[in-house]
Image 1 (cartoon, helix red, strand yellow):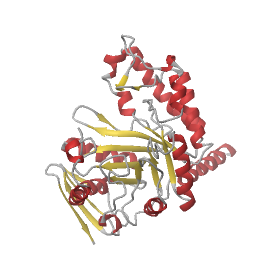
Image 2 (spheres, rainbow, N blue to C red):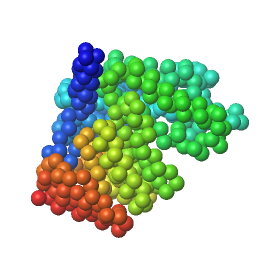
Image 3 (cartoon, rainbow, N blue to C red):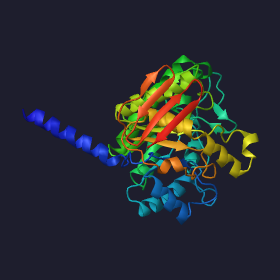
Image 4 (cartoon, one colour):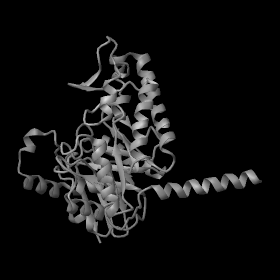
Length: 374
């Protein structure tokens, strides 16, 4: 009997602590998160006040504040302190790619001093994602120990509240078998799972582990496949890139619903019909980009709302730099929403749902949507 009471006590403490270290959530209006880096400098007082007044959940990207400062570690630490001084409830997440050796980190210098850590292809050549961008060999325990120590230093010993572990989709891509061979591929996959577990062990149970993520394409559907030790999963490409078919969009929405019901935080990033990699579009005036974003917001917002669960967050812009629409605010974000009255209803590719102050209809086949705000 004592063992049963002890188990129930521990369980209740765990459940409470999860809610305590999650961002405070509300259905009052559309729940918004931020994810960006600012070029050249840290946020101004006005920008920081805006961010902390509109959300309590932000991922600060690689290269934030550079080149005013030399290293990403320095800028994120300074920015986290600033944001949390304004809003103590702010959850600030440190971006730390799980696979790619970006040169804007001080940690990069350590990685470059250890060539035995560098991932190589079957032919012995270094594996690069693109020119000069090396990949970590996660099958190497020394790499993982170095990586998790960086995470611990920035989060447990620093001012941030969790880690953004990027590139899981790239790591697990079966096409890597052709590059590395089956044996190496399998060992890297095991290394990724070990990295997540080892990160949790070093961060403790009250810090957020975010990973990227859920993605559906005609060739490959990836859901919340790393549920152990993680708290947050991102849907990064909804309705854009190779995830714009009706089948892909439906799968993404259903995966959001499923992950949310399992207790995960879900970050749903949507696009206004263009992205920072569209060079021809990027030369257009900023005002034209905003006008298009305003005109196109109903469909992705409806897609989010139709499947969102408690602790789901919406992001809408065209990139990962602050100047790519990341601080734009839309009238829909201020309208009363209220709690969902029902779960998503699926009829082929038509989806509906009702909130206390809004009703949602979306057709993924025709790319039409309506949000009736009461």
